Length: 385
Image (tube, rainbow, N blue to C red; front, side, top):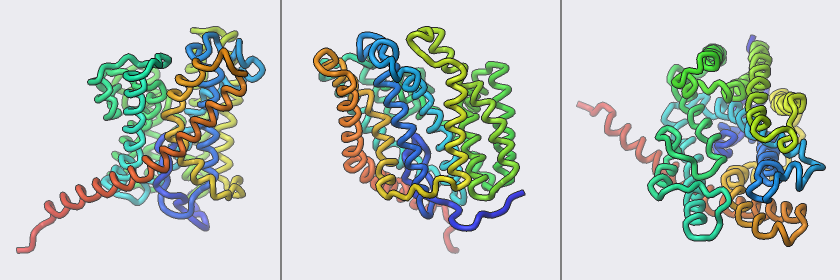
């Protein structure tokens, strides 16, 4: 059932953006970096050109960019592509690591840029006249946001995009628990099977506890990503069954998520008909299948490493950039040019954050956490008699 693939088994470095997971040791899968940017660009396009009436004063998909409204509206599913990539690379990252090593990898990768983004958002809304996307949080609630556990405490997110990080964090917790049993290919199939069963039960029963733990609307993407990794590494035939099941579950979840928006706004202002949603989900599954089967190995452009890495700060900060630029200049500038400038500024800021905050922040936090774990291990080690 499992045949070990010739060549690198654990491609990529552990330093990929946590919004899309972080891969393990070995030669880097540059195609995943490319897909990360595709996902980020889709989300940015959705927020700039389809989602936000508060930015433009009208519904942009209908009133500002109708020519591309059907495409940019589907950019909302860029987050689902991130989840698929995360399932792939987080399993790869956890494979062969202790739970402590996995935790250090994830925390050091996740938090430095996140803390910076929360501080920037706090300063923006406390000390400027910007009010678009203002979360209206107290200073104490911003402090709670620094933990990334705000939703667990019933506190609102400092930014609307943070809901996906909360889902990612719970996924990491599930993988960490799984790693305690030792990750093998066969155990992955058992883990994925159990998760699917509980996700379905959670969706049917609407149990708050089961929904919190097993995330029925996000689980199909994470599980599919894990299955694609098993296909990539072992050419697992059984994993294709999980791809098929989670593909159906993902379409169901995506249709419900989009329908909530359509019900609130109508197809006129949120032009995402069911058929288009099915096509979009099929496309993102096809992209991950292409990675798993090696069809995108021709993507070997080294700058993709940096492009993939800057997607995390881009994801966290692009709405704040748009809140400053678009309402200020929408009456004075061509709308297409304004979006292009806003995207360029967002990417430039993301690059600076990646270079000045993300990379040194990861290094610093990883060293501190490793030191703490090492000192505790030494204290707990049996002393020679």
